[in-house]
Image 1 (cartoon, rainbow, N blue to C red):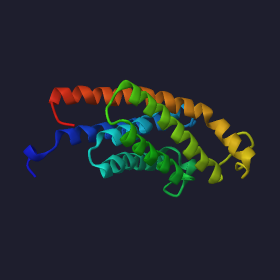
Image 2: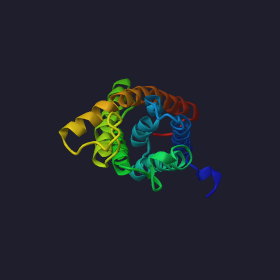
Image 3: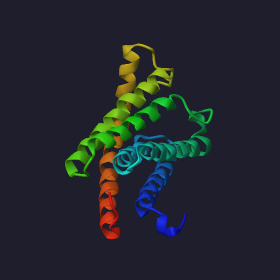
Image 4: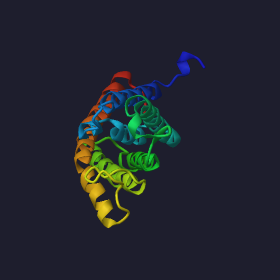
Length: 197
């Protein structure tokens, strides 16, 4: 393949996804796992990937691959105490939430308007909150209040969601800020390089 055949739009999209993965590792390396660790671009990355890649499989593959690689780095080098094998308990629910966020980007953001992006960012935060924290509860993760696994009843699920609210706030703020950066920067780059949709 010659350089003339390389798609500059695809290259720019990959750079955005790579940047999101690097930012996630840098912010996620917080040893205390405080709510600020959720101020990462991964929700925005999934939404942006869903809205921007012309081939649907790429919109899933590249954001989820960036999530997977950053998870491995975080679990194996920075948070071994939370690792369960290569990843962490309930990881499948987290990945399911990001796959749903990619789908949201595909369905909602046909055109990158401010309203679509804000609605998408809020929707992405809610999807992540509901799906991934259900996974935290069902996988038997530790209740911060009791130091024991969450009870497998409505009280345990409610406690899990309640404890996740501070994290969800940072996820929402991160989605809004990083969506603004990703979609806004991509529009500027598209105009500058004049490549097609």
